[in-house]
Length: 310
Image (cartoon, rainbow, N blue to C red; front, side, top):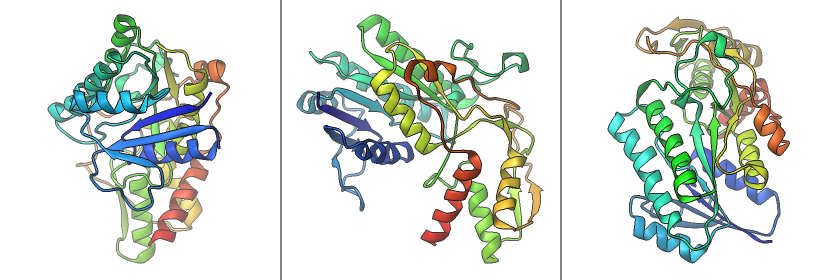
C-alpha cells in the first residue's frame, strides 16, 4: 500500500530530520510538508506548502486534497515564551488540526510530537518514568504539552481518531537550536576554540536528563507510524540518566579544551527538575524500536557539523 505522509512543522528541527529519514526508507511514499514559511527554503526537495494551521478550513482542504494515510503533527512552540503563546501554538493549533481531521471521511493515523516536559515534577521513587506517570507540568511549555497530550486522548475517545502520543525526552543532534542544551555548549566550546570566549557559562550543573538523538527520534516516529497503537502514549529517550556536568565533560574529552566553567545564576532556575530519565520498554515491545546513537556520538556529530559549517 502506498503511503501518503503529511508533516506539520516540516521545516523545524524534528520535521527536517523526520522527512530525511522517511525518504531514506525508499518506500512507495508521497510526502507533503507544511509550515509557515511562504517561500520554499533552500535545500527543500520534497513537496511543500505554506499553511497557517490556525485556519481550520484551509487545513481541511489540504487534508482532503492530499488524503494522507499518516499525519505527523510536529508544529508547535518550544522554549521560552508566555503561557498564552505556548497554549496558542501547542494546544489551540493542535485542536484546529484535529478538528479538521475529524471531518474527513477517511482519517489518517496521527503521530503527535509531545514532550517529557508534560511529566514535570518527578519524585525519585517514580524513576524511571513510565507512560502511566501522573502529569505534573512546570512552566508554560510543560503545561501546554500536558494539555496537548490530554487533548489528543480526548479526540481518541470522543471522536474515535487514531492518535499516537510520542513523549520525547531531551533532544540532541546536528542542526539543533543554539538555545537548547546541549547545542548551547557545543557553540560555546567552538567560541573558546576560536578565541572569542574564555569560559563556559551554564546554569545548574547537577540536574540529570535523558538525551535522545534526533535521528533516533525520527526512527522512533517511523516505527510508531507502522506499529504503534492508537490511543497510546510512548516515551522516546536514550534510557540513560546523564548529569549536565557530564555533557560538558564529554565535550572536554572530545575537543581537548579545558575551559573555565562559570555557573550563571541567571541561567539557574529554582523550578529546574533535578532528575528525570525514562523507561522505554513500551515502545520497544510494541514496535521493536531501540535507540542507536549515544550522547557522546551525538555531541561528536554536532561538533563536526558546526565546525564544517563555519
